[in-house]
Image (cartoon, rainbow, N blue to C red; front, side):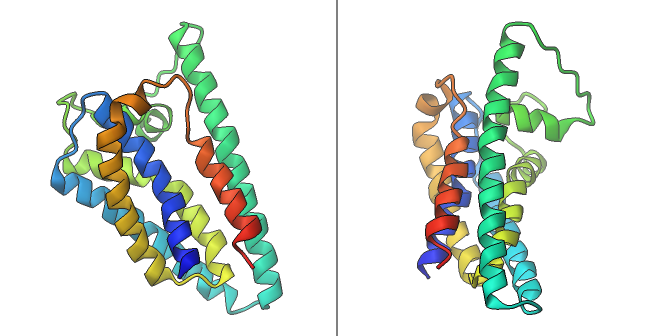
Length: 205
């Protein structure tokens, strides 16, 4: 059960950063959209873990553990580099050295660069559809993490339940810490990648 709890906390870190960015920018997340964000995050993790568990039945336990560790380390490394790239693009954009035009079809790219872009109608409040788009964009790493973790014997149901609980706590924490987190000039999502690498190395045994 400890593995499920740790994994749920790690994947909820992105939710904390996303919601803190929204709250810090004055964007409200009403109860229903907040619950939807939480549900999607837990469901994505549970489904990806379930799929990975099915795959693991066809290979040996030793191979599962080795592949799982390698996959999680890779995802963690990609997350760290993604955070660095995101910070670089933001700085270039602020200096006027980069102009990125994504149009109406580039929502995922916008959300990748700026979590507050979810407020498409600029109403300072997320609707259900905007919350769903934000949750799906921030759950991509959770899906990949679940695929890598399921082959390590982690229960999909327990992980999904704990992800829902920790996700609710992350949204609450994002509300409380929004202005402080959003005022930082550095992207902190790299911490999630570091935590994932540590989990892969020390939590797979």
